[in-house]
Image (cartoon, rainbow, N blue to C red):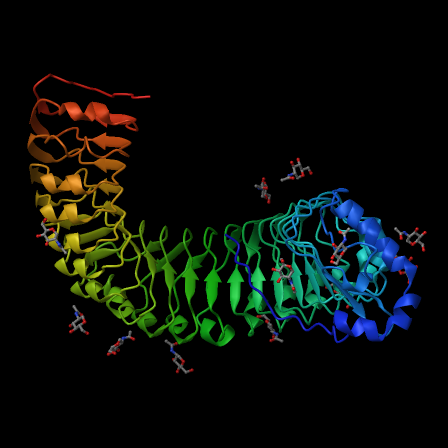
Length: 544
Ligand SMILES: *[C@@H]1O[C@H](CO)[C@@H](O)[C@H](O)[C@H]1NC(C)=O
Ligand SMILES: *[C@@H]1O[C@H](CO)[C@@H](O)[C@H](O)[C@H]1NC(C)=O
Ligand SMILES: *[C@@H]1O[C@H](CO)[C@@H](O)[C@H](O)[C@H]1NC(C)=O
Ligand SMILES: *[C@@H]1O[C@H](CO)[C@@H](O)[C@H](O)[C@H]1NC(C)=O
Ligand SMILES: *[C@@H]1O[C@H](CO)[C@@H](O)[C@H](O)[C@H]1NC(C)=O
Ligand SMILES: *[C@@H]1O[C@H](CO)[C@@H](O)[C@H](O)[C@H]1NC(C)=O
Ligand SMILES: *[C@@H]1O[C@H](CO)[C@@H](O)[C@H](O)[C@H]1NC(C)=O
Ligand SMILES: *[C@@H]1O[C@H](CO)[C@@H](O)[C@H](O)[C@H]1NC(C)=O
Ligand SMILES: *[C@@H]1O[C@H](CO)[C@@H](O)[C@H](O)[C@H]1NC(C)=O
Ligand SMILES: *[C@@H]1O[C@H](CO)[C@@H](O)[C@H](O)[C@H]1NC(C)=O
Ligand SMILES: *[C@@H]1O[C@H](CO)[C@@H](O)[C@H](O)[C@H]1NC(C)=O
Ligand SMILES: *[C@@H]1O[C@H](CO)[C@@H](O)[C@H](O)[C@H]1NC(C)=O
């Protein structure tokens, strides 16, 4: 996911004329340069692939200044803006664009355009805003664009453009406020000359094939609010100079091979930070407690690095915190009772929606306070740690939860009956713990449940009949327990969407219910190692 932020661009399109005014200045209209008409018609022909129904208002019966998406400068009656975003045009951009020499604003985003960006675009010396995003444009950025030195926004994201990120941006595009080249095929390194673009507020180069290190010169972009370099092949250390970017609100360096750590005074470096994403890199060190001073922080994503140590209990100060993703790291002590203290503090974060902390070294018991998490919490993942004790009954208070993963820990005790209150739960993973007792009847209240994994525990008793109410089940894993009794009729046979059912390695008796044969989507059925009537040692049914 590449976050798209919209920034306010200060266009000086003082000069857009309403069509009603045109009548009053018909004398000028007659004088209006024929070149614009010809250029527009040539553009139309290529943009619309000659399909006459496209852009119907672009016809000779009215003045071109009234054509859809066209605006003119009142003084010269020349085209000053072309605003044709999202028109389903599908053609190419004609070199005739270069004849609209009064153009300041060009927006052709989301049109399925293909072909190259014509070099004639370099004739548009007045151009301030150029948006060709979300098309299929290919080839390199033409060097002639260097002539458009008034450009404030270059928005080329989501195309198939290639070549290197032009170094000459840093010499000629000195008015740039927004540079968006994300989701293309650019390769090579990030030119250090981009550090000259001192007006830049938004730099997005994510989702390309860029390599090498992040140039330290970027630390000079003191107006930068958004920096998006994720999903490339960048390496080396995150340059300390980046922590000079005190205006930064959103930073995404995720999915590279970057080294380094988060500075202890991150609060002073990034006082306006809202979005911080450095997941899937090679970063080390701890989460500095000062993070909790960054009052606007909403999303903190450091998934898949080598961070360690405790999670600061001061994070509860972050009242706008929405997503905390710290999974796949080395946090926690493996046993210490203080490992999970931070969870209690997070109950103060009333906007918290997502907390992922699986695959770390967290130990100790889960505090009852987790029942006090925000009612907005929809995802809570703590699988594959060393968490012990029982699963608190308070968990049932998290009534907005859609995904709960506590698998692969050291939980003991029974499955809390209160789980039945989480009516929105779709995925429930309690597998590979030491849970015992019966599967609670209340599970049948979870009518939206589609993934249920209780495998590899010490659960006993029979499968609750109430499970038949969970009519959305797709994948059910109950294997490796001590479940017994008959496999009741009308439980699984009613689950039309069932794909995988694993009941193996229990103590089930009796015959297999015949209604299992009705399941049209069932791909895998495992019932081996039970005491079933027919000695089914190892059975995998494949129903086409
Ligand atoms: C663009 O301008 C050039 C030079 O003035 C002219 O030769 C050409 O025919 C024009 N093209 C269109 C499509 O208007
Ligand atoms: C030409 O444009 C005008 C104004 O939009 C429209 O009313 C008219 O139907 C168009 N003519 C044709 C032939 O498409
Ligand atoms: C450009 O067009 C796109 C698609 O219609 C639109 O979302 C965007 O806001 C436009 N940009 C400006 C500055 O008007
Ligand atoms: C760029 O500007 C220079 C100097 O004004 C001019 O010689 C050159 O032809 C221009 N190139 C284009 C593509 O407009
Ligand atoms: C992008 O361009 C490459 C060649 O440069 C081509 O192989 C690929 O199919 C194109 N992808 C899309 C989505 O157009
Ligand atoms: C831009 O930056 C480069 C390298 O960072 C530098 O050598 C060059 O002088 C700068 N150019 C301008 C026009 O400021
Ligand atoms: C990333 O860069 C390294 C060299 O620094 C190279 O060996 C590797 O193949 C690159 N990976 C991709 C996916 O381009
Ligand atoms: C930017 O950061 C570097 C390295 O951390 C530091 O030496 C330099 O003084 C900082 N520059 C500014 C303008 O703050
Ligand atoms: C938060 O900021 C205050 C004031 O700058 C400072 O005194 C305090 O030490 C900071 N807290 C942390 C945890 O760094
Ligand atoms: C959480 O809120 C409680 C009560 O408002 C307060 O006593 C406690 O200090 C807060 N904890 C944190 C970490 O913000
Ligand atoms: C949960 O919140 C309630 C109401 O604020 C409070 O009375 C209770 O002590 C809290 N529970 C825990 C375990 O912190
Ligand atoms: C859930 O199921 C149990 C047993 O089937 C039932 O008694 C209870 O009323 C249901 N509702 C809730 C919210 O747990």
